[in-house]
Image 1 (cartoon, rainbow, N blue to C red):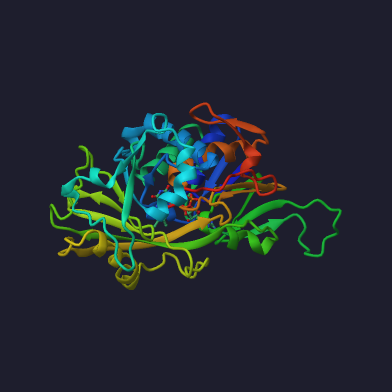
Image 2 (cartoon, rainbow, N blue to C red; image 1 turned 90 degrees about the horizontal axis):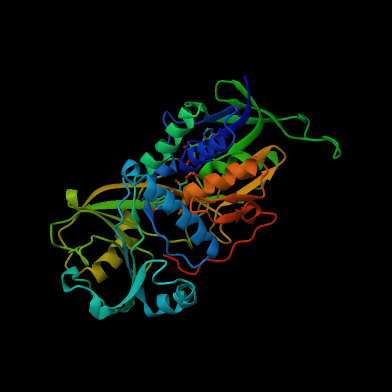
Length: 406
Ligand SMILES: Cc1cc2nc3c(=O)[nH]c(=O)nc-3n(C[C@H](O)[C@H](O)[C@H](O)COP(=O)(O)OP(=O)(O)OC[C@H]3O[C@@H](n4cnc5c(N)ncnc54)[C@H](O)[C@@H]3O)c2cc1C
């Protein structure tokens, strides 16, 4: 069977793209292939699944705000919880973020800046500095922020796609891309595109167009065929700790928000119904842009050396905790501005570079990737914001740098 479009990869981005493409062009025969046995078991399932609307870059704001609006409309289906972000900033963080914060509006973007004195006493946070760690200067308290179930979100898109007549095949790992020019030394005036793709069993799949929504695998898949996708994998690790009740009092203004600590990008997601907290960190330098094994190991040494000292400093009373579980995955990074890439060469499109915020931006990214596949110049996002599709391309990219960085 020849398809109009084959999407490779059924993570949140592939599923969202498939749904929006089928919605916009219901007659198209669209196939999604996935090497795993289910939708959303790649890096989508490894994510902390946090979302926030607080970004200084207009691109991030538009992608996140419109996606969050969509998620709010299906909140009960995807486990959306508006927990808030209690983002503690050091003086340096605050100075660095000031111009970004100035671009936000307290009412429209629903946040407030709290002074250290407004931190509830029962949080028992140590706000003072040490030789290694900075003093807490103030708190950026974001209200349109929280968490959702990334797996439910991806499967929601996949189900909607199937309801419209879209097809998903699992256990299909694409191993080869067959170009119309078999000989690498083809004449430069000839037209070249993908004729078919081949899976692990030698089965060929043919289509007019191919969309690689293969996240952290995108570069290794496309580079051998002369496509520099610019997407690099970088490992990220998550740890859950079993804590004793009341060791960290999370009740802040009648809410249990996500806590972000000033040093090293350590964040804490409470899962208090199970007496657990989930802790992650976002270090870059020294962390290779490489995928050696999948899934990668979450290393206890990383927890002990990178995360635990930060926790111990800011929450000294957090003593009797035990490591309950750990896992790791890969960010698919577009390093220069950490926003997604939606690019196309011939009949080969790729959509990735979600750089650690693919869950919170997936709805907008899917709409933009679908529009790119249909060669539309502009797309209307869920909240009716207009977005120029080429702004996320590599060749005509127009993305401003993010200044509010965890
Ligand atoms: C530890 C961690 C924490 C994170 N926390 C957050 C967060 O709090 N908020 C947020 O917004 N984002 C977060 N992210 C990022 C988020 O998970 C990603 O941006 C998002 O999941 C990317 O979705 P994707 O569909 O591009 O990738 P994936 O979910 O990895 O999907 C790609 C799919 O392609 C398939 N595939 C690859 N190669 C082939 C092939 N050859 N043939 C067939 N199928 C193939 C894979 O099996 C996979 O299912 C986090 C990521 C990690 C690792």
